[in-house]
Length: 499
Ligand SMILES: [Zn+2]
Image 1: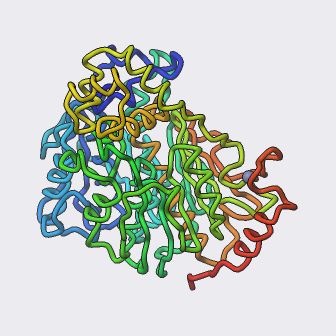
Image 2: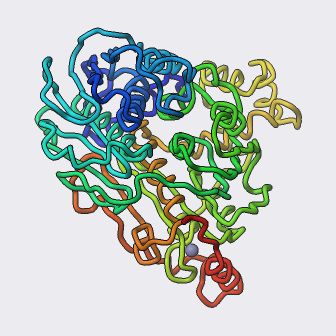
């Protein structure tokens, strides 16, 4: 598999996108007006937008930051930069720590996106992007954006604005000529899970609670969950991180793993995440091991895994509450599992993948070229000669033990994945986790378990929460089973920890 950063967002989605080689790369200027620069909502939106654009290898050639100097950071905003820096320096340092698209100061290039409360601009704006509290989005004119909760320190709305703005940049560059039309405005609220042309000011301005949860899968969606929780100023408690990707972070992950930069390549994901976010008010404890051999002990479990076998392994432990996030093409999706026997469980509609036997994996690799074998061998930390020897003999030993997990992993890789979709799924999932700790009736709820957001049409009616019932063929949540009865008891007894 290619190790290019762009390899996961190069696909053409069945012809909807131009061939990647035909894309005309763009420069983007992010403008942060002085009056708005100190607001946490502006800082969160500006950083996440730069974070996402600076990962669009092959689409964005440069990001310029126009921001007044001397503005302090409002809290935990940029995990990839020191909190002693001022906002402008931290945005540039953080963007360049990703190590993909150059981020520079004070240049005007290409399209201009103004971040924060919209007001008439001297230089003009191609797009306004802003969020506050739980809602965020974009507008060509800025009309109606004064409704947003700009004083809220929560990152959710600002991150949603960044995701939708980055998606519009991506779509404008990649959609077939004549098929792209910028929406005049589009907003999404992860409090009500609704999309609209005007922002919705719903939900509390801040959220203070003590977490007791686990996150399984510190990949693209998991990074978005962690980035969001880390940036909330009033969360306490503990979160267990579990990930077992045998090759650790690789170059192809960097297009969408929002908390990591180039220096983390090669490191195990759970440990690296806990290290990157160690200044959090939440205690993160990392476990670089597979979920199949890990005993989950928290009442709430967040699933951000990308394999159905891992989903089944989580469901098989029947934690009281499972919240799940996933992506497909340009669609983000979150699910609150249950109620047991009624709503979908994590195994419902997710047939575990058939992992080919080791012998078959070895046979397939024999037909691969020398370059592919060399790349795999390097990832596995063995020599090309050792890899060839194992292919020829199949003998037990280090080479096989290191190569086989990689080969099994490659089999399960999804085709297309891009940062703004993964981050939005992570934001929706983090919001769902916090809302689940509070007494309220907004989705995701027992009646409306699933929410989806499709970036192709940000205002589509389907971008909302709806009921999602169990798969009648699912073997793990049959209503009359003993396992389902045990799950139901836990589900009903789960603590509400918020005010
Ligand atoms: Zn089920």
